Image (cartoon, helix red, strand yellow):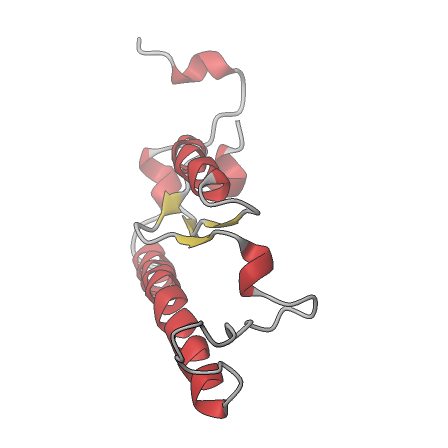
Length: 131
């Protein structure tokens, strides 16, 4: 089931939701599905809870307005850059792992074809069964 298409391919999971935990719950469940398909999911995932409060309609990061205790008004360039940097750092961890695994898999495949020891299932799901 999908072994020739997905096997030995690095993957990353990115989720978003309108609430706090919906996307995260879905992402955790997706990890086992990707593994069963033969993908190599990286450990770092990207979760964006309350996405409507994070991105505007054009996909730009929303900088929060001033809080009542007199904090930053959120409209200056420094605040926007800080928000952008925080998201870059958070997402960068996942993308860095994905890039590392993709490069490692590509380099290793030059020496060893992974399908030699783990051939593609061509007949039936019964091929997965133990002898």
